[in-house]
Image (cartoon, rainbow, N blue to C red):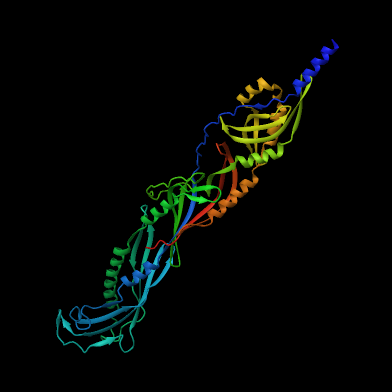
Length: 473
């Protein structure tokens, strides 16, 4: 009987020492669910600069440089029965002065006049014309200050409206040497006003309305075009509405401050460019800065290497019917998504060698900027396989150790994303559109396991100016 018991004990030890390989079937991964971000409406401030130099140059050409009486110098202009004259008026260079939304165009005019008089009774001449006397010849041309005031405004259809007002001529020198000391300056000024009114009408006809809509449509199209952001994906501004905050002038520049409502987002895949007509200028409430959802990538291979380096070699000893069982972690590999849970493959050795699978829920802790896989449990197929071969592996120690070690510090990822976004915001998007801005804050808004990576949806806020220059009239 002693020999029989010894044999039975030896047999049990042999059975216990037999290392059966365990290979659980891999779970079928779910198609990744990647919910679209509910993007908040942001405000982008866009100073648009319009170079007025071409307008100045054309205005210089449009306003005549020489005004004369009809058929000067041969014919006379007769003012009633007793006065006749003929004159020549030339203008100096146009001087432009901008203040707020008002453009002043001024210049100095130089004139000279020849005239004579005679006595008239009841509208009939009773004496011949006196010898012609002149003003502005021997003593030099007489001077007068002349100008226009142009009020600039923008209509909701992106038309710049310019309302031209002629200023009253201001004579610097008077002509009072002829006609028995009579001051004929008002006569000259009246004639000059008529000539200037013709020039005013020409200016309003040519430049009274300037259509900027094609330029704004080009800008709108460019902001709907996706731009590559290094190591992050594609940025699309997605403009929604436009508001004009203010119109100012500086130097030769017309500065239009544009407020734009937009829904910017950064995506992994390059989205198609959106083609839509630029909407009319509207009023909408002001928001401060911009809000962007940026989807960041965490590669499963790198996450698996980090987890394996922390867990490999960890050893546990279990007792099963007075028999000790040993379990040693070899590798822990992240695979993908199943039913919105992260799937991990665990390779182990010890009493048995093999593979099983666990799932867990990825959660982000904002206080520590840490991603942790929580609620780790055996996959259903691995559970079934282990029940048949090694039920002693069902232990909270194993899943608890995985949960403890499956922890990732995202502070470096968020810091790198912030740096990359700042670099991309402060650059020229296309010729004529340059960005200037910064990300003030970045946080995690969601974690989404995908088939090949872990998607971290970051929420960013900051300020962005888009400077548009080079819109010639």
